[in-house]
Length: 80
Image (cartoon, rainbow, N blue to C red; front, side, top):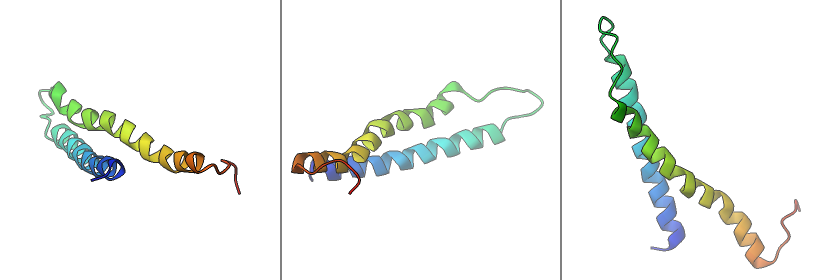
C-alpha cells in the first residue's frame, strides 16, 4: 500500500472513531440523571478529542497533496 493510500485509509478510520466518540458523548449527556447533576466522566470527552487530534495531520496532508504535486511538476500555483 502506498503512503497516500495509507494516509487516506487511516483518515477514514479515524473519522469513524471520531464519530463513535461523539456518539458516546451524546449518549453520556443524555443519560445524565437530572436529580444528581453529575458531569459525565472526563475520559468520555476524550473519546472524541483523541481521534480529532489525529485527524488534523492526515487532513492537512491530503489538503496540501494537490498543491505539492503541482509544485513538483513545475506548474505555477496560480489560478489558470
